[in-house]
Image (cartoon, rainbow, N blue to C red; front, side):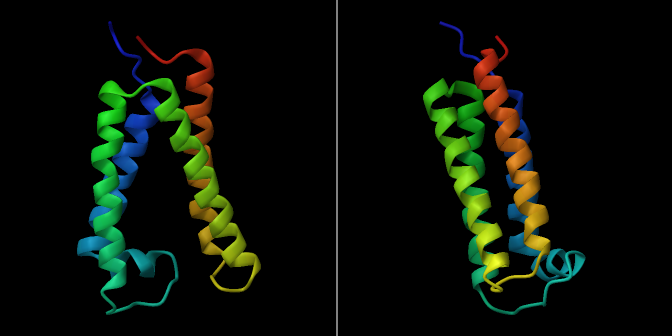
Length: 121
């Protein structure tokens, strides 16, 4: 049985690889691009490792993932976006996070549209 391949999941895979490597190896460069304060805290690099770990799952989903697993990523990604927006609204983070939320929302909605369309055989 041939699996559907969702191009949006491949896009998400590339996105998390780039974000993970940037956070792990060049965190202050990335933070500076978005006007955020530089840091020497380990947590930004821990986040980079976590994001890179997610890339393994996205690649596996692209190659083998079923529709329900792929759909769960949409739910999780939209939850993440709502959290970013909430941080900004509550004054806990700079508005630049809304840009990340918009990018992630776009990728999640792309995935949702592919699910509804059946993916690419």
